[in-house]
Image 1 (cartoon, rainbow, N blue to C red):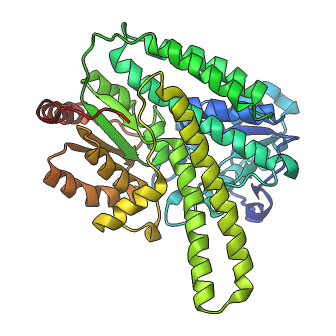
Image 2: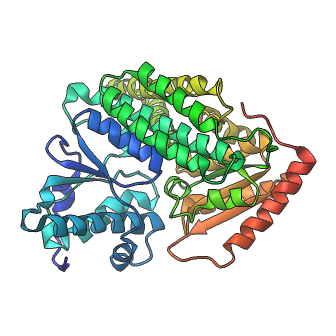
Image 3: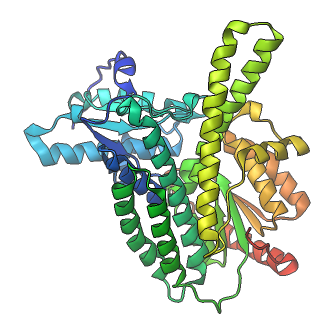
Length: 452
């Protein structure tokens, strides 16, 4: 592929947005591996040709077409899509048509650079004449990641429900792996068991996702939990419990964060990472919260012509949030009788935590809302150390660090910042070892909580 300097900015309007996926292959970047594969399976159950992009194999392309000022996830996803397109061009030759694909790259409003990924990547893709037909499917936090427009309207709600359940089940699989792996009977057993079960659950969502047959899905999830739990050695004593937060891509993308959870486990940790579904809940909560604020101001200012829209949003996003939290509780309740997995914090409770201690405001937005409050809850629950994972120069995560680090010093809870870019950090393992020594001392003095 050879790039051109001719750019067509009209493609921002025509080739970035929502597109009907029934006639094109949907390309989904791999962020958290387990949840993304289940999400793709859910899409396929509705007749969408969804594929997960191979990740981190195109880093040379990603770095070649970025300046270094972008945050690390932009470089990774840029490389992933260019690598895939190059492979498809080589495979199909003259039959290759970039118009046959939609690249799934959501966005967020606010100050995070994530909101500009798809715009910048549109410019890069347009610089390759053979890739200008590739569309970018840009779902947005501005409407709570609505799926309207990508399939028939009457099936949008069902697709959204099935996709959300897929993400929660992916979170459970992740937490199951992190719960079992530090206590496995032989090294590698937990990873092998989860990989085997992932294939089983992918088939489950392809078969039962469209019909919203969640009882079938949950029954199979219970079987998976039993199988993975069977590789635990009950004779291994509890280990220091580490809570992880941070930027959603870096904290869940194993290669991007240089497998930091496995590194922590190597030095004696059991880790609980913030979930993907927590972020989805947060976007729904933010829209619900915004609708309440708009309704209140409209009443105060006697702008009654806007009341209808605010009320509509209030019920729509409130309904989304209610459904999400209900399904989350239901799924964790099904597995909690089999194994003690950490549950997600309710987003409204996290806002209360920030208000009570006057630490930060949801009015400012960004993932800092979740990270700061999440770490305060980890402390209250008796975790033995906290880790903040984020892209180098990430503003929300640097804000988080500035607020939380002095608090952890006061509480005498070990804390570690782990920023990442495309380079390898020579002192990384030394920093993790030092942190884990401190966490082990905390564990010996205070013990650890029982997961509830």
